[in-house]
View 1 (cartoon, one colour):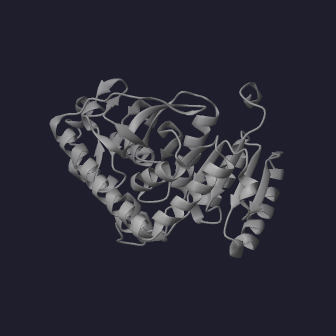
View 2 (cartoon, helix red, strand yellow):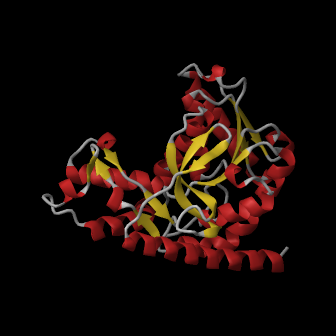
View 3 (cartoon, helix red, strand yellow):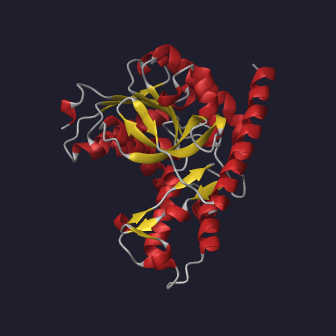
Length: 325
């Protein structure tokens, strides 16, 4: 089916030997919509990347899937990539706030974005390194790309988590739950409960009789990552599958609405000059359209707090990169 859209699809993954990077690689290869994946890593990790490739080939053979996997540390190998995923960076440990990662991860993201602009100037850049909203801004500036081609994972995973929470709490099929989280992928994320619907009906039709504890759900949502890290050491399947879902949405030109981080220019509450999670329509060439959203007063207040928080951190990171070129 993919051949009606394009002849060949190539994806590069920076940080491919990391927990999330290798899981995304295998998930994408398994979907059979990508022809070639470059597992880009540091030279010192090339043996590990090669071992991952051998292992994945064995698994893909069982499904008769012929996706070419290339372990590499040579930027020439990323040429002609349709999508470049930047997932490399320092991992978040238990109790660590995402924003604490900004300084050590900034140089990594900046370098990979610059090299992408040189070797794969027609690619879409997808950023998942945390803090993802700040790193999306850094990648945008370093690459010089159009803002619609530099996308952060943003609140896509958060939105999936909220969907799951509500589905399980209300004992309703998750396909009937239509909800979204916007703002920062972090402490200032904003669950849009005021516009959440269940089977086309407002959430409060279901929440009141079932005594839905909204503050508890919001808190669980904000601490979901730390909870998983505390119990198993790292988040893996959730982020990897959310990333793969996002990439598949782009490559299949499906025009789905997902909540990702993008550089705003006044489209939502007049907020500009900052990357935040908002709903967008995704298509083959990146972001087609930013979807207008309606928020109640509390949600507006939290969204503006998210804007200020991310702007402040982004400016500190910019100054760090300027002082440490």
